[in-house]
Length: 238
Image (cartoon, rainbow, N blue to C red; front, side, top):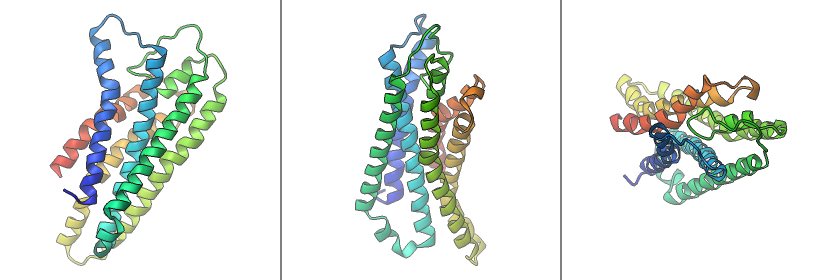
């Protein structure tokens, strides 16, 4: 349980727990209560934690891909390549980057002005929903969101794809069919979680703001509620 994989898995579990704690309690209160209001500061706070934790989830999944790459492609160097000190350093960088990214987007949103109807047809305060309600010019914020989002999310995604290309190449060189299955089974849980996370995230954010609609709320619920719920099940079954 002190191996890097379980250390990263513990952090992923903590992130998922924090993630649902940020949105689900308020959503359940709204379902049961007649007063479904949320304060402006409460909305920005919820947005900050939502952005930070989604980013952290993404970066931890990239670290886990690197863990699988080293374990399969360079097993004899596993202990030195992923030492406890290096894991702590990488995880600290992930936390720092996530906190900074969430803070930047939240500060940008705090400069947006709202007028007219301020009814959020959504289960929580989400970036695209708030931008659609704004009456000030949001073009710059949207451009920053797309540019930083591509770097924060597509860079780790590309890193994971590259890692798995090398993993597949290493597995294909294994002569025994049983050994191939055993090697691939160590990646199956991570692949399932990554597919679920990136599939729903891409459906929501890889599109222009003008085309965003209530249909995309289903995908948001998937990555905000279903994915954190499924992660423990996927890894427990593994």
